[in-house]
Image (cartoon, rainbow, N blue to C red; front, side, top):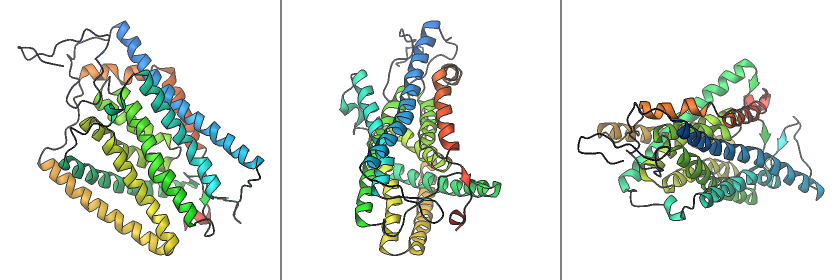
Length: 359
């Protein structure tokens, strides 16, 4: 929005603020502008689209996963459990568990892109990506990742103290931890999942919410991204790094940094499995702890430098935006359906604390 000679923002003639893909610093409107009935309908439709796509992704992925499992069983696949009746993870099980979400993320992105008649180049701009922003971005990814891991451990400890586990226990046997499994894990977890999840959650969810409020979009898209993972532990990590990914997308107008950051942290997770395969659990755990410490130190230094240089500035959030975000969002039935689906998915992972988990 351009300002007039009196330095007052001009009013938009559109039903609601015109779509500005990610542009940082825009979106300032007069705080006394009321929400008209036509604008309210347009905003509700926008929210319904976002939440409906999230619901389709969540439910669709579960349905497709079950279809794949049934087909696998028809061709002779057998679910295996260990002596503690814990599900054993192998290559077919891992593919069936991860691929449906990847497929729906990519499909929803293609549908939304086609419906909005957007060019693919709009999602991968490079003109606002500088070396300084790249270094700052990865530093903040490391900081938020390491802090989120610490919060995870606190939550896990609290849940264990309460007598339940917040995650569904699975077991990867030494026989199944093989080169083919690691190759499959790299392709699914470190490449396809980060790309497709960013296409949906920053390329669709964040982008649509940015039409209302960029400030709100960063936090809301991170929350949806975290809850999408279907368990309390990953929800914490997803929300933490999702804030950095969303901020980077808004700041640069591109998905390149979020995708790169997502690949970075998922590759680190896979590298722990690779080290376990090459050495042993104790060495892998030591490596994991040391790298997290390095991440935290690098991230902390990055944060100090950014604060000293005033290098962090969230988009404006005025009364205009507050009237058009949470109050209207919670009036959408699709929002509550989405939230219910996520909560049920997370609660369904709760289980008793076993000796294996306590190790």
